[in-house]
Image 1 (cartoon, rainbow, N blue to C red):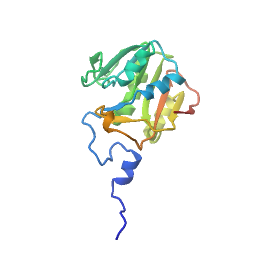
Image 2 (image 1 turned 135 degrees about the vertical axis):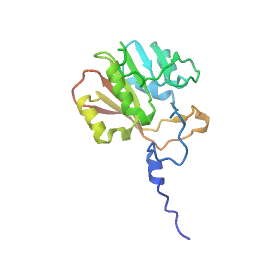
Image 3 (image 1 turned 30 degrees about the horizontal axis):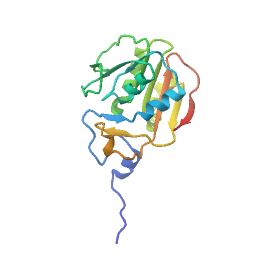
Image 4 (image 1 turned 90 degrees about the vertical axis):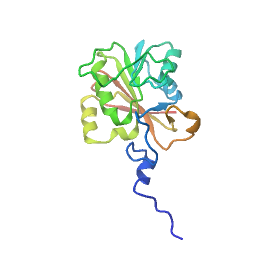
Length: 199
């Protein structure tokens, strides 16, 4: 009997590439981040009193930040309840208003680059941007230019897997083959990026 040799999508699916999946992606790329990810971030980083969670989904991360005493503005393209402040298309404005605080989110992966650029353009000097992204975000010539021009201050690689649940359904999401990290920028930082491990 012939051994199974996979198919053209199998390797990409195991690696967690966004556009190669055996399952359909959620229409608006809504994959909620388990709250533990926010707890881990707050163990290693301090942020400004005001945090904008600009792709908040059902506020899984926002609630953790609020529990730690931060003032949180929670917005998303789609209203999904959970305590969000308002619906807002973070990428829609061609010239964003400045935000005197930190921006922290797990952006839709297909727009991750745009979210990082927009967030760095939006926060005021010295404030932080933290994005929960796949390790694969480190790859690519376009992203290399981003990292050269605006290097993250620290990248926190999660040693154990953290879950991102399609449509926020954590009960049906029990494991993940995808490696994630928190990428943390401080606007104006020009030094080398430090890589650390958490979890």
